[in-house]
Length: 291
Image 1 (cartoon, rainbow, N blue to C red):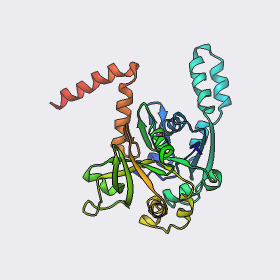
Image 2: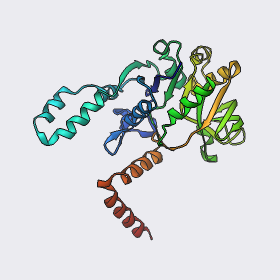
Image 3: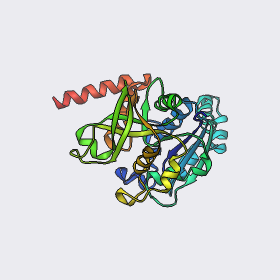
Image 4: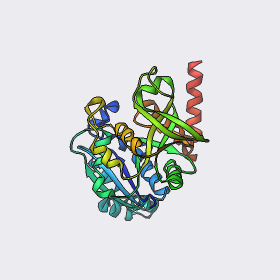
């Protein structure tokens, strides 16, 4: 059975971006003029997924509104022929794919957020894409994981090497190298100290799971921060069946981090013909003032 469903957890409180996230979901923060979650949804679609479940929480209504029809706006744009391209853009957003919304009533962690989708997923393999990670590559990161799943019919985690300073922010894996970029998972430790970390390979916000992960989540007690940690459920699943870790190809932006967010804006602005020249000139001016 191929992977056709994806879960996008987007119920986090976004405390690293307060005060703006007091009233705006962090997933709706704009990369120039496109919200972060739009890139995540587009990655899922480009990976062959056509059924998306977004896990939301309190004050996340803006996400639903963004992907919904906007008849008043469309009527306004349709009155002026000059707005033809804007009208087409707005209509495209609301017709991307089937998107379903499930509310996580309490902020009980990533593991609990994924568990909310159990009834919709049923007994199918599925992808998980964190709503604040943007990964750019010609072959989408999620597609890379699905291709690996199709080879081994086992759960797959996306991993990348992280700096010593960031080790304590990730689930760090211990893996047996099998071939280039592929590991057989032996263990995963949630947010270890540098001394306790089994490697420098961190699990980032992309996964493909077999449906057995849900039983493991049901048997996972609250862990770090009093939350149900997805990492703990992965350890339970790994005791039952093989799990693979894949060092993906691509450029990742952690837009839940302020520096990662700024990097995403600058890099994507440099890719736009109407912004690149002026931005480069401005950046050269900054360098000149600092010298």
